[in-house]
Image 1: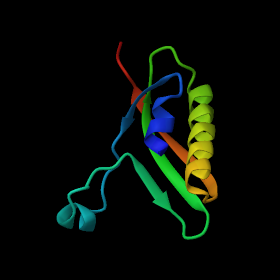
Image 2 (image 1 turned 90 degrees about the horizontal axis):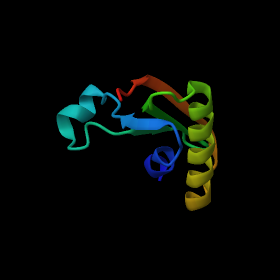
Image 3 (image 1 turned 30 degrees about the horizontal axis):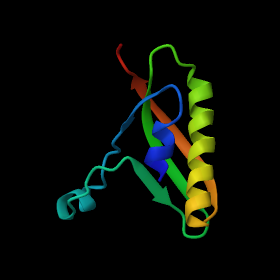
Image 4 (image 1 turned 120 degrees about the vertical axis):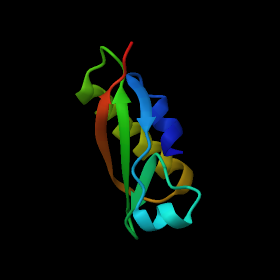
Length: 93
């Protein structure tokens, strides 16, 4: 849900897989994921992405935060307290 919502925001070049925890990397086939979810009550999501050339970082980050929060809350019914964005770089043209 979060990946789809983030990709639909104008200015997002691509999502970047997060580094896996070493214990999960050794025992799981899903070692790389695009979204990390933490929190037991309210969810906190962590997403890393690259910005499209010419896009304003602040606008893209705010757009992704809003889109992901709304999509996840609407589809799951769970409260999202934060969406943390890491800008990993700028995509080449």
